[in-house]
Length: 141
Image (tube, rainbow, N blue to C red; front, side, top):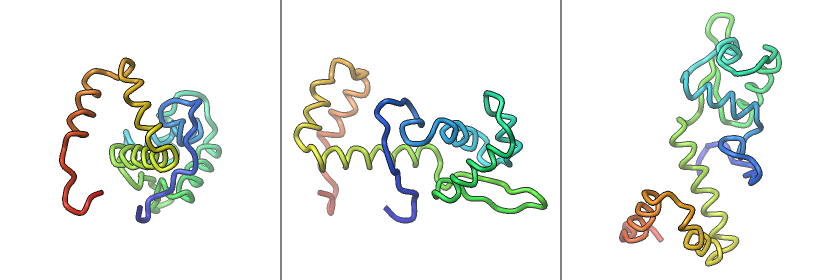
């Protein structure tokens, strides 16, 4: 996996980024990904809701400690950015979740995609069929 931050939990009862992060962390990551770089003040301005500057700063510094954000000093302010772009992050998380399901539940996990076929967007189902039919590249299992 490299130096990327490990996903500590996948919360089934939540949706979107809140499955991985806390609610406020998810909102902050969304803002950072949209802006690409931001100060704490920038994030406070772009968040929906009434948040205190110090609360956002604390959560952003925790995201740095967890390895999801990096920061650099510019003058008197820190500029924060995501370690990975949204697409790379979501691809990595999806892979970790899929690998975990397959490792722990094997055939049962695969069967759920078949059983859920009626609930899957037809375009996604076509993509799944296309990917399943591809020959693995050399060195892949």
